[in-house]
Amino acid sequence: MDKELLRLVIILSGVLVMIGMVLWHFIKTLRARPDLEDELDDEQDYVDEFDEFAIEEDEDDFSALPVDLMEEPVAPVAASSKRRQELPALIEFSIVARADEGFNGLDLFEAFERVGLKYGSVKVFERIDNRRLVDFAVASMLEPGIFPDDDLENYFCPGIVFFMQPRELDNPAAVFEDFIYTIDVLADELDGVAWDNQRQPLTEETLEHFRQLLAA
Image 1: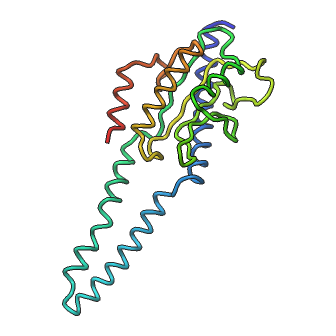
Image 2 (image 1 turned 180 degrees about the vertical axis):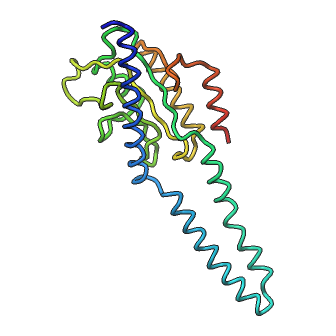
Image 3 (image 1 turned 90 degrees about the horizontal axis):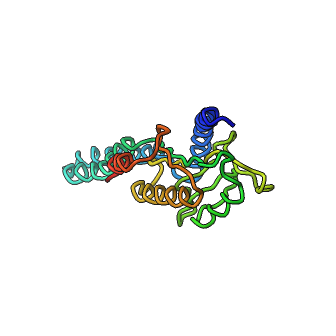
């Protein structure tokens, strides 16, 4: 295949994979993690109840203590929510094969196993944390982005795409370091070139930019 045509195919496939994986991960996150809006609603209900208590106590000259305490539970949640919304919604990097035929399925599965990635129920590979939640996922650049579970010796893809959603993670900075380490190891083992979110070679400057975005 002509290399320019291959590059176009990779780019288009990557866009489709990204859309699909965002939807996949969003749905999976809803099942695995508590809903932030529900948490805030519950917190507000608590504050409203506390507020009513404070007003009632005011009639008996005990307003000062409950009113002061009433504000305490709200501040950490508000600050955490604001900080979370400042994080990138999605980080997507890729590894593109140097060889014209792309990556072979057997080579991919063996390399993924060596770095501890698990083959998930939706047929992509995932980094699972100690609570059995997904830190990040790896999909194929070939539409629809999944990896087959058989006939691997005859499967080839031009590249693989890595996804992580910092807003859904408890410690996005730490996960990002594992994310980058995994990409570096696989790029070396599979003989591929790491790309950033702009489909350009991944540089240290780009990594530092994202580290600053994710810093606490």
